[in-house]
Length: 480
Image (cartoon, rainbow, N blue to C red; front, side, top):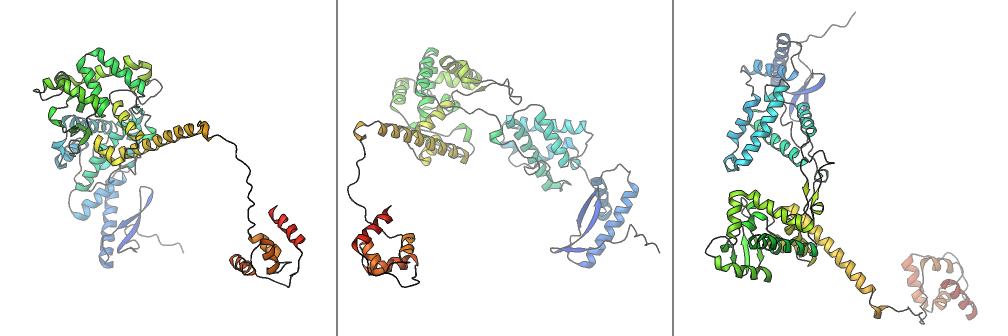
């Protein structure tokens, strides 16, 4: 007799997983566990029955090409009796803006950038015929990340895009429980790692290079010369140096709140060097103006690109363009050439000089105003390198001291023969403790202690009487 076909609407088998009951369904080609949301078996049966009825109705009403997640939404509507409200992609970013408490604290540039990132994603979704944010699953997120990378953007920009999309989806998921949660999370879409970014960090200047840059800056006038000297003597960033104020200089120290870390309230405090003190004294006649270098400050406020351009020209003239720039020709993810020597190199140079003097991480943090653990790690590496260079110099110095160069003379003192486990194990097979004591020039009691130390136990009677000639012969054999 043929097996009776199971009704499509029959209640599936319930399984207690943890504290709640679940049942299994085959959805979109995958075996899924559906939670009933309750530990009460009767309520779980009712939920499962309602779910199956809703699923059957939804499948019958849906077209064959309807996606699994849309079917699931229909099921929710039937069970809850409430219409499932979907979120249009082009409205999603506005919802995030309304629910992001610190949005108004963002700079105008950051806001524009965030809107641009999501607008590009919305355009891509429109090209994929995706209307609602609930439709964006992990597959779409992976394909969009591939699309971004294929456009040739830099690794840093790529990570920035993914980070913001992840931020928006995470916020929306907390608000409306997205079907696919946050498909742009770090776990779903790995970011490009720092060692894969193909970036070029600012390199520290060697002493001769620093001299060339300072000398070249004098050709651009007193203001740019002094700006370069302030950077070299303090390691502060270009904006902080250009907008340095007199009220930041007190008691032989410069204490500023760097613009880059202004929101967190961190401060940098570095001593005024003799060279910088001389420069400040020469400029003290203009101390009625709030800025140390009024011309540079005014120019930076009006058009900071001009100040950056002039500083770049100083470095290129002093060191040569080939030395300061790394070409982007062979890097598809870099639009512009990378500048490895610029005003920021003063900061790296200052850091390396502190490391060479074995300055502690805590003191370096206070002087340069660091807050990120990454910078501490960078400095620790510089400390290690500086110590390595110091060890190299010390090694060369000691190796070339003539007074320390001489031949090692042969030792005239005979080393005392010491018992070893191997030798004692061999000797006790033939000789008594008394004889072994004569061989080593120690007492019989000392021999017993050595035997106990090595855990050696005698197994038979042995020779006690032995001549001095034989003793010496055995000694020679042991030494060899």
